[in-house]
Amino acid sequence: RAMKPYQLSDEMERVLHDQSVVGAAAWNRLFDETVASLVFTIDGEDLPLEAAANKLSEQDRDTREAAAREIARVLRENTSLFARVHNTLAKDKEIEDRWRKMPTPQTGRHLSNHVEAEVVEALRNAVVAAYPKLSHRYYALKAKWLGLETMQIWDRNAPLPIEDDKLVDWTAAQEMVLSAYAEFSPEMAEIAKPFFTKGWIDAAVKPGKAPGAFAHPTVTTVHPYVMLNYLGKPDDVMTLAHELGHGVHQVLAAQQGELLSSTPLTLAETASVFGEMLTFRKLLAAAKTPQERKVLLAGKVESMINTVVRQIAFYDFECKLHAARAEGELTPDQINAIWMSVQGESLGPVFEFMDGYETFWSYIPHFVHSPFYVYAYAFGDGLVNALYAVYEEGDPEFQAKYFDMLRAGGSKHHTELLAPFGLDASDPKFWDKGLSMISAMIDELEAMED
Ligand SMILES: [Zn+2]
Image 1: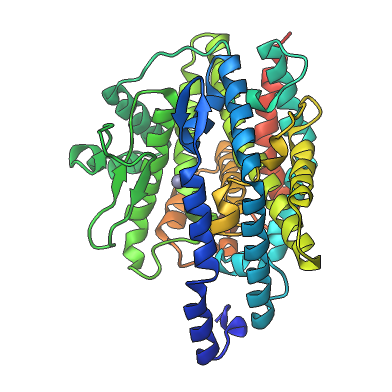
Image 2: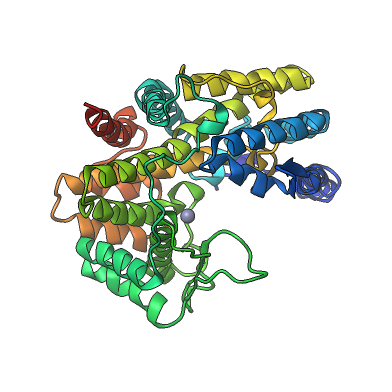
């Protein structure tokens, strides 16, 4: 019913659908095939994009710099093609939106996310206003830890020099996550257990296995499966906590049946990010030295900045790109300028941007595949941080309310789901609650400096 006002006649819908094969879908393919064919030569080794981008988080600074410069070189060679793809897709979207009488380029995304424009606006504004106390402050600290006056873009994801590389074996990881879940609620650990005991997780790294991790609900009458590539790094433990969170959510929501069990994107990461937070808090409480605590806090802050600040900066980039394209075709330089304006604003004054960074918008797949998708990541993290803050305030009914929320699957609007917790996502204070949690962690990191 919400989408009905934007639906066209059956005949028009069929033309648009048929035409999309040689329209948006074809430009998406051109983008995917182009990105897949790029070759980056770093230290004499020919690499695809993902492997090249991975080098940006290597311990060795020269390797990171070489990777950044090579990525810039290859992207620059292809910028005119990427600019053509973005120009065409933004125009294609504008044409279709106009026919559907969508009031803004973002309307379609908000509708499918079951979220109102004002709510997203409140999120966006709260995050942008918090840039100075989040990313600007954190990266200034990180520069100090790395012994740098200014940060280069190849330092953004650099590991901290104090990080150790001890590994966590599979049994220990299982113990860690299940006990973190059990401390929150024994019922949650019970739901998670069969994933381990009944073989619902494929964890090992094997030749030919796809990279990444996911939890798949299969169908509501069976049970979910989790896929991981577990190597024992601390991040891998967090990924296990994350995917198991999805798994618990999928088990609980299954009672809604096939059509209502899955949530819109904005709520899809609730249980996963919450599960990570529980595990993180447990690890933090178990830290034996201030150094260990610092590494954990810094890692968490950094990943939250990547989810909240970076994704909102991406969202701003897209908003500006679509608005500018509505005025006419954009040159690569104009797109580069939009990118640099949001990057400078979000990363802060400690960064110095190398020549070539201006083209780094061009390989980000979300802009091409699913416009305005990115804010959902910030939405999910912000929502969980606000929920976690309520949990920490010690509401004795919290667990029961939390399980009710997961059981509802996609059957309820976010206002209904959050009301029992006294939360309301359209209130700018709601987002500040979550953002304060990140800035409190940065306060602690700063205090550790003296
Ligand atoms: Zn997830």
